[in-house]
Amino acid sequence: MKNLTENFMEGYHLFATHPKMLQPITPTQLCRKVPAEDRWTAYRSYYDPEFPPRGPFHDDMTEDEQRNSVLFNIFPSFVVAVAANYTQFLCLRPNGVDKVSIRWGVCGLKTDPLDPEVVAYVDLCKAFNAEDKEKLETLQAAQNTRYFSGGPLAPDDLEGTIWDFLKYMERKLGDKITAVAAE
Image (cartoon, rainbow, N blue to C red; front, side, top):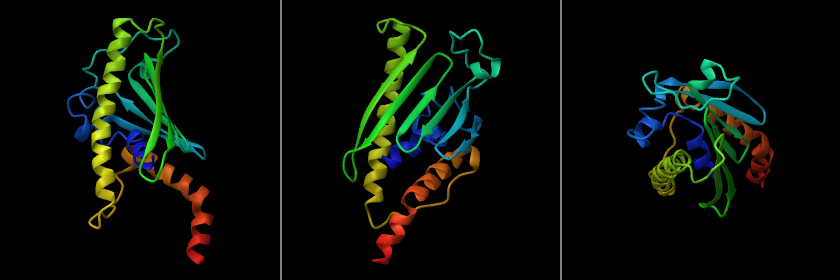
């Protein structure tokens, strides 16, 4: 669950994991972290200015709001991507040491789930989730080897949300981890 949450909450992986599908639309270098609070973190994933607008837009949206998606994590296990036209959400539930159960969905302004635009967006979500799944399964296997060692995180706009998540986990588990270590 931790790997999936972290993957969802940073735009840093877009250039490597989704070079053809998402990087052209929301380039890694245009991600900007939003100031977080104790229970959530977020970042804005701005669209390439050359990419066509992703309407339809609600009447009260500013031009800036039309040109980015906001991705947020309500700690520890609810992640959401809010775009101008659709919202994708994932409810994550641990299902063992190295397994996670996922309930996900999409909502938007269009009401007909068979509308070709809705079907195309859901298909896009399925495709990039499949790319993420492949990389996350490889990461999970690599973390379970003696050769794995963690590394530093990228700057705040790219992986600051990961720091927020780790600080949340430390606040929730810190005393428990210290108590177990002392035994």
